[in-house]
Image (tube, rainbow, N blue to C red; front, side, top):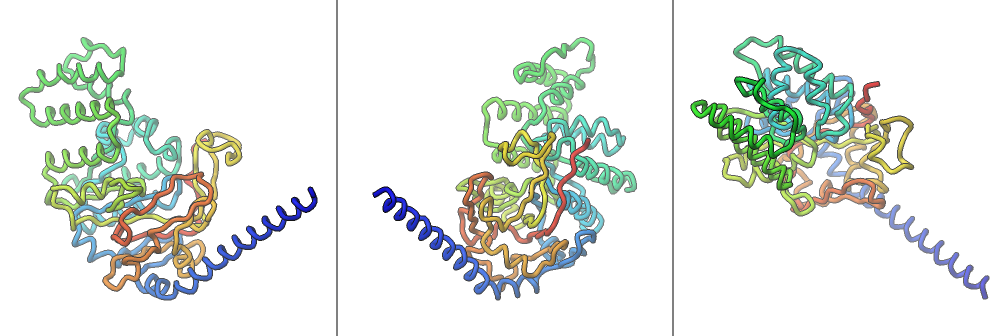
Length: 411
């Protein structure tokens, strides 16, 4: 009897495995067979170059000219997006008069970063990045060197053509915030620095409001910091905080006639809902700021690449020895994450190359297609991003990278 039961169980397992194999093979056969028009479109609407080279960006010229807010969304932890960030911002600054860089930093961190641009003090840069929201960017050579490259570029510019950072993220480092507030007091020796609690900072801001009652610029900064402290206390949604911060500085600094650049994590730059919620770019698009048709979003897709991750943030079986792990990442891995249509990109981008691809051509086959709008994930090891508003233009361009190295940790 037991042998019969085991035999039936064995047959059922074999049948299930065969069914899964048929489904797996059938899906890939369908994806390949239906991919012809997509591969043709990608090949005709892209710039593909070796990893070591820089894009000409000619394919983007018209879209840049029609846009006021240009947003790039990286996947944290790779070295190629960091290199792209520096190269693309220099291009925009030289050719399109982009003088404002919106950063995934809080207001005070960005203010200190502007000071670093002038002084080149690397201790200041280390302090700014110490508690950065981007875990992969802390204690990391590639992210650190990115800012060194931008600082080097800054020093070569004439005084009338400098650029500056604007931080729109939620508060990331309360100790830096407290020190910044204390530095605003004329008689610093009279002010206690024995706490970085939010309540103390609010009290200090109230005192400073009296001192700077006739300075509108400083009063705005104090009001801005206060609203961010309150948002932190109430644990307000991060995307909402980022949008409110963007809206506040956009209006206060009268940026309506400026072309702006922003570099964030990939989810923040999508222009429609992710997992049923509006990310930053979607909130801006729907707002009354007049930017609805003036946002240009560029996202990254990584294949056959490596990513850095703090080891303690990973399940034990995925960790490498040491504080950081070098993880193989590929957007065509069904166990972790699979973007439907990703093999179309692989068919037209050789290994050790990258492609800058225009997705918004009027003849694009991606309109109302599940390609790029559907992901498959068998094991829930990573956050899954589902495009809620199917067929909508989430991004106008993508950078598809094959064989990127990790962002290398500092020793």
